Image: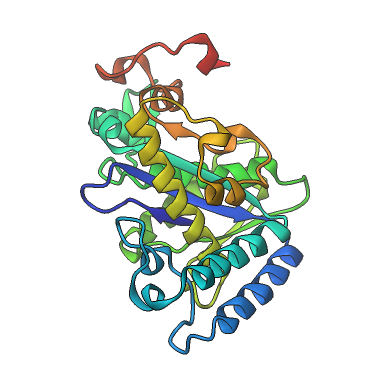
Length: 279
């Protein structure tokens, strides 16, 4: 898993990545390294989207000198590697402007806070100022929900080190939450470098393109059909299993996540959901 859009001023915060069997990951990582090596670029050790594309969509750095044909083939080879490995994508996109409309109590609840309604007090307070942690929880949940009984998900995140402590606390809370029906499928969590774990470079590419697509959706102010997405993004999510594994957390999406918050903690932005969202 990787993130995009946690910086100040970002329109949307995204966590995205892939999951699959250890065998699939070994096959992908071997081929991924071959593609990097075959690019015949001595300084290229790993792929990062922000080092390939600039803010206007053009190429930057060492890639700016490549021909369009070489660059297109390189990206196509990487995405084909991911698709051919038959890994499953997931993402969660949280609209920053909608997040900022929420009260501190709502944000505490959304980032792992638990409220004791009997004693009218917070048991755990979450991280109200860490927008990252709502999509982070979804990223933890989706693979575990889908994982077959008897198997465990081992998580790898390319996570900013300043968030690591709370991320670990949140992970262990979710893993020990007795009301969860997937906690027993959650294995361990680790934070390797993307050079050590090429799968993180795959997550980087998906997170970057998800962030780009989410900004376009905000601009349009309406959902986008699959054929309206960029060919690259369509390819990256072509192995998807369920639509719910790609939540877009705008006002309705956040209200859905707040369904179980005690009524007296709801803020002015909370609205009862339309039937199609509740279903």
